[in-house]
Image 1 (cartoon, rainbow, N blue to C red):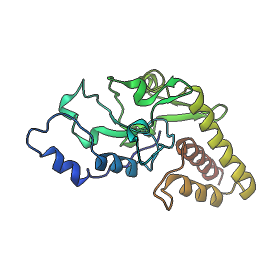
Image 2: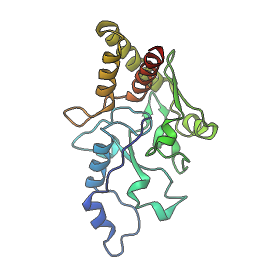
Image 3: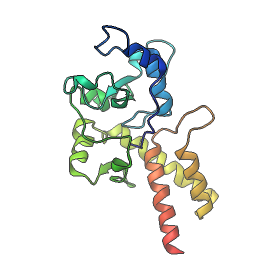
Image 4: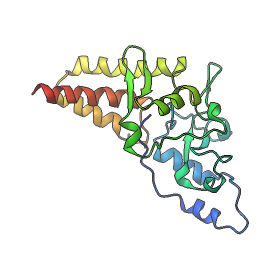
Amino acid sequence: MIKINKSKEPIAWTEKKSTPGFTEYEPISELRNALLEEQGYICAYCMRRIPVKDTNIDATSKIEHLKSREDRADLQLDYNNMVICCPGNMDNEPHCDNLKGRNSITFNPFTDNLQNTIKYKSKDGNIYSTNNIWNEEINNMLNLNHSYSKINRKKALDGIIDTLNSKGWNRGSLANQLDIWSNLDAKGKLKPYCGIVIWYLQKGLKQKHTAI
């Protein structure tokens, strides 16, 4: 996971909420598009590329409420309680919103508090939090360590290692790659599974700084 820089809610959603009698959550395309754009078209949880198509969008992305509508009906229209997720089912292993269902998570992906606890295992792509409660949610509520996600995180990590092997492991190369992986590309997208690469590059830069 990476920190999501939350934007102001889309005007169309503000107007929709002000419609007399509109009290029950019902998504609109402008809401979905705003969430996709602010997340760089990757899942808020597993960081998979969200497969956006012109049709049948409900099958390719899900608007997720951090605090579930069942637990917190008062937050069901709150843009700051929403993220967008992938379909949540790869290799018949439910994960992300598909597994979370009506549960609520306790962490906030819009602050540094969560990111400061997130770590990875370079050997197999495992993700974990040093906060025991959040780590429990990562594994059991979101299933972010299911086989497919671990394999893809490891592939992303191996890819950046190959890149650095060819370009050099100096501070300049590390910083350049960190900039590439931390920011949107020309099409407004983040690289899938960028969280593990950002973590790895930041760790490498810290080690380089300590060695100076």
